[in-house]
Image 1 (tube, rainbow, N blue to C red):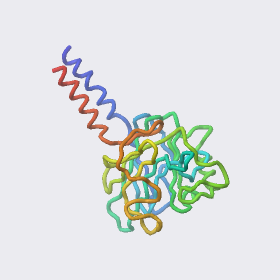
Image 2: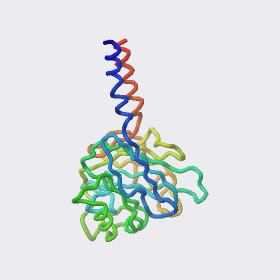
Image 3: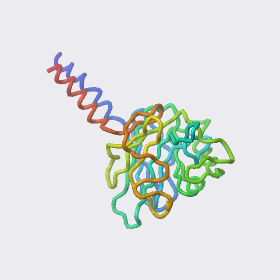
Image 4: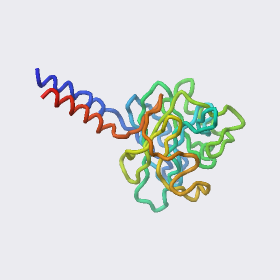
Length: 245
């Protein structure tokens, strides 16, 4: 009976670690693509973006405005953004940025905000639906006049979305994103990295309007950062186990 109680206390840890990690390659072989273009994810799944060439971002948008940042009424960016991730032509290690899905019932929409990459088809979707498909999203992107995340003037504005995401900062050559970094209550998540020649307006070490990735928090609907998730679960299990022994 005592053993059964211990096993029950540890069961949530095993379940938590059973979630799937989906790997998405960004700019593979120098192309303006996400590969795969869509992911079907469950609550708790991790999506890991591997930046393989040039200077791209993974930036959250909306179905209505595929190439524009999500902003609030004041214009503050509230969607998440990996920041520009420059990869040298001779690179042997590559930045990685991850998000964890916490509301699989809402689709998530992303694009690269470098120049006209979005219009060229560099868009990505998590859990698209029959009413809002990836192909529809890509077709909308092709007609957008937004540049570098600006609001588009030829269609819907990028207002607040029912799906939000928060990410951890990119870590060069790692298999998962680093511990720090996530969206705060009113800002997008940033990712550490250096802006390269393809983004001449960004300052070194940051990009565009992406805030500093120094805060970790949970954003409603969509995804949460990977910060200390495993350690926290193990600590809780350890406390429960200690109480039972």
